[in-house]
Amino acid sequence: MSLDLRGYTPARVSLGRAGCGLPTRELLEFQLAEAQARDAVHAVLDVSGLMNELARRGLIPIALKSAAANRDEYLRNPALGRALAADSDAKLRGVTGQSAGSDVVFILADGLSAIAIQRHALPLIGAVLALLAKDRWRIGPACVVEQGRVAVGDCIGEALGAQFSVVLIGERPGLSSPDSLGIYVTWEPRPGRTDAERNCISNVRPEGLSYAEAARRLCYLLTEGRRRRLTGVALKDGPSEERLRVGPARLIEPL
Image (tube, rainbow, N blue to C red):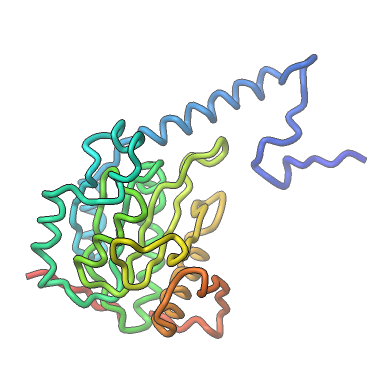
């Protein structure tokens, strides 16, 4: 009895063959998937659109840029994506006094797939805010960062005096997932934090981890991280309904 593996996974399995090569349809689909992955890497973030939608959700949006001057520089020198441009750093320092002491700041960074942010960041944030509204979480400004990598959240979180930075970022595209969104959670963010001091939730998209489940896991990490005063390898991602105690969120308004 044959087993149709394609009914269980979107991965490129059971492709068949034509002579010593792939069937024409499968070859064309592979080329399309590769093109979509390349397009995702070079896509441009719609900053103004995201800013407007974040404001509609009651958040205070701030547009920032990393130290990478353009996309080519960002791809060739990853370190530049981990630091803020001088003018963006100055802009952020200008709101530090008004927004200091927030519990959570959200950072939306294009990463390696701007379309992941465009498609999934806002629905995810909506689901997260609904859960955080059950408790007294102080929500700081939401920062939209062009040419940003995960560690840029450390600079932002420290500048805003936040307990947690939550970086939503476009993950490296795959041949079946050009729009996968990743979430990185860091307790007491500051430059020099390592990946071992963060928790990651990956593959957030309708075909992967749902918004509701990703929001539940994120809120669990925030709740447990605040209780234990840490994130990273010492904090396991294992939420259960009875342990989930999250939630009215209070926004930190700049003057």
